[in-house]
Image 1 (spheres, rainbow, N blue to C red):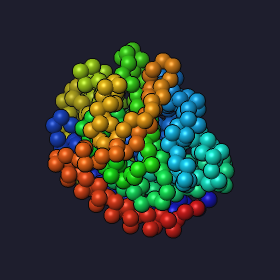
Image 2: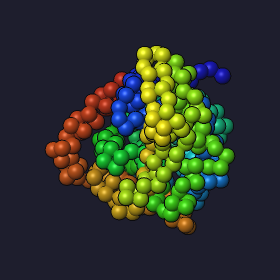
Image 3: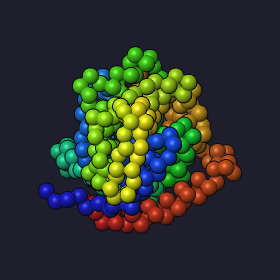
Image 4: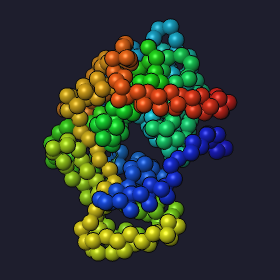
Length: 360
Ligand code: TRP
């Protein structure tokens, strides 16, 4: 099996992320560092944990509603292409692809992910479904790569699943969807998977499982710094912490130093001092209320078409379409954003020339 022929979009250097995050106060590390090959595999294991209800619940909704989702998303005139932001191994996408194959001859699938090895797995499992699935991977941070969606021919359904939107601050989430909105046309749509606010008794175990997989996943950022930047983190000297913040409606993830220590990172020529109990903030996972979801769409120029939830009301799939009047949401404050959306599109244009050549 040959390597994926993909375009490596210049990622912000892990080095910069680490130097800034560990040099700052309070200390933090950006979540994108989680998803190297090892982290992506650990995350796959998280999605199968008994405590991690998110993936299972979202898949369940997709299984029951795929045909309906497509019916609402589809334009009768043109084939529907699928674009998936942060596709990973695209395990959940197969349901939609199968349903789409019942409606059209061919499915063009454009998964975007930072992790090339996860996309390899996606390719293999989707190839097994049918030769009528055409796979066009893009190895990129989807916040950079989403402009690639702008120049695809025909109608598209953009999938953004797994409640990854919850890993952004609400205003950044809206800014991301606004940029996505700029890449879409009338007739295109967005399917957004969002974890809903619920009892901390259910939330906390989902982010701190008994088998310790989530702890390993969180600590993998330190292991990665050791591997890639010559760091000297002792993983046993840090504790995985997951806390519910009710006021902000989010789970917060930290790595907490068990005792005072100083850690050298050779390639950065850096020595990071930790007090006992000092934390590195690694991730937030916002849990949306219906009100938060409504303002997210309103603030980003989308119109909510339809909502599907599971019977317990734990997770929601939202189908949204670009609002008819884009000018009503592009306020002066957003104009920069709009412009960067256009810049992204231009960049995407170049990417797609290459992508087009890579169609398998
Ligand atoms: N998108 C996932 C979520 O918010 C990411 C995630 C799951 C995660 N478990 C985690 C991130 C533990 C950090 C630590 O649910």
